[in-house]
Image 1 (tube, rainbow, N blue to C red):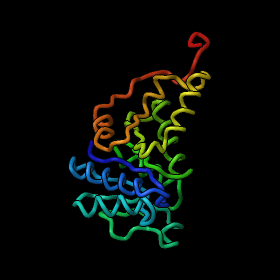
Image 2: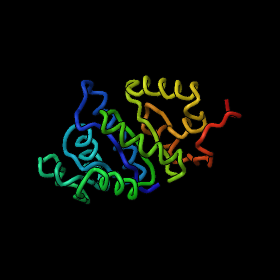
Image 3: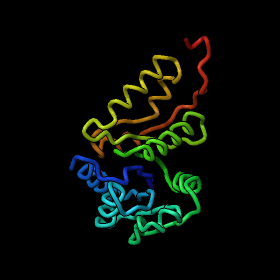
Length: 193
């Protein structure tokens, strides 16, 4: 695993634990020489993790739409910065440049990016591992809801297992580096009920 896409908030969140978790993930990635790909912002958790990876001598690639760059939220000190036309191009390039995906705490943009990659994994469009850095139980309610979708037979348990979950960045990186997504049909048949 040479590069990981990190999805995270453009806000810092209410707890210092989120920024601390971002710095711990940066340290774990730098120790393994895993480059970071992210949305290119210099604000919120995005800025925290990018700055820390860079401070530790790591490589950071940002991908940001021109409209956001023009609003002066783009990070100008990155190893590489791509300025693209729109959010669709942003997400596609981030996915192309990455060997796996991690979602840290964030808002609906973070969730949307994560769920697109989760869906693509479920459909077999990629075989890259996915993980949640579940700082302070941030994603506990989401995981409970996803288990509910399994119980209601809208998602297979094996597909839910594609999404790794850990509160410690080292444990999460270990899980992602060892992950081998299975080849499973997406659809749930009557026989599965």
